[in-house]
Image 1 (cartoon, rainbow, N blue to C red):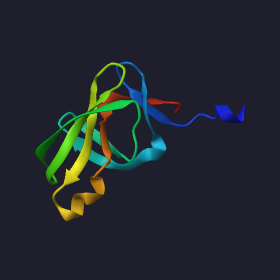
Image 2: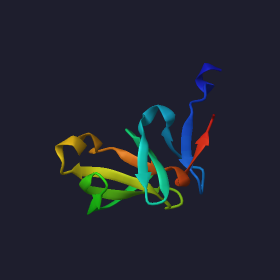
Image 3: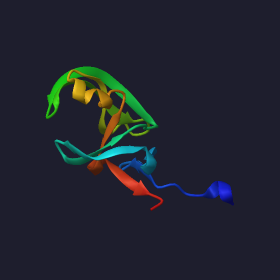
Image 4: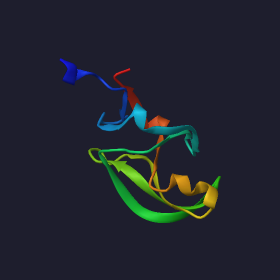
Length: 106
């Protein structure tokens, strides 16, 4: 029975594929064009798209869209590179838009 302990997690809103755990959240203070977003240390069951340079609120970044592995819905993006030294902590991290994910096991 212990192996069935549920962890609070997040899934794709469209197909319900698991994408991350609540414990992987680094920050809840992120914004996307569609609204609130969270920064995650780890995600799973996503495909990383092509890198592109974008000027975001915090400066120039190289990012790549991340897609659900099952339904191909864009869920957010991955920070590949940050130009500003103060933004380097984002490199290799993932942003999931809250409008694209749902809570599971809450």
